[in-house]
Amino acid sequence: MAHILLVEDEVLVATLFQATLEMAGYRVTLANDGLEGLQADAQDPADAVVTDFRMPRMNGGEMLARLRQRRADLPAIIVTGYAGEVDLSAPYTAVVAKPVSPSELTRRLSLLFEDIATTKEF
Image 1 (cartoon, rainbow, N blue to C red):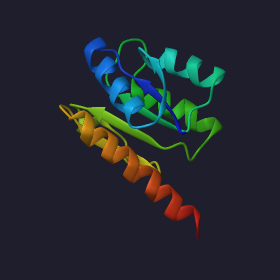
Image 2 (cartoon, rainbow, N blue to C red):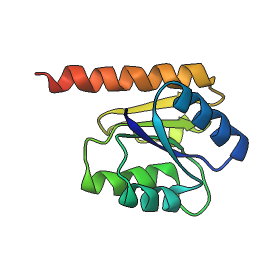
Image 3 (cartoon, rainbow, N blue to C red):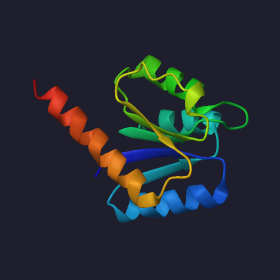
């Protein structure tokens, strides 16, 4: 079972995404902002990250940059209404525009894991 670090500052969105990901068979750790995300990952490293971009204290982009200092190939989905601000140059990074349905989020996460599995086979 893959472990997902879910970082979202909007409580209702976080609750919905967490429930959806857990129903899809993922183990989910929830953090409310980038700083909490860093702390959570340090205690229990995730297999992938689903994060909002704009959050208080530390945005999702900065958090991912710090996480990827330790694991450069950490897959991530950035869910945001501000896609123009997101650096898309990192490998294994998908950007999903808000609003996104929970089923679309789960589908995109599955596709990201499939892409990684296919790439690492060669």
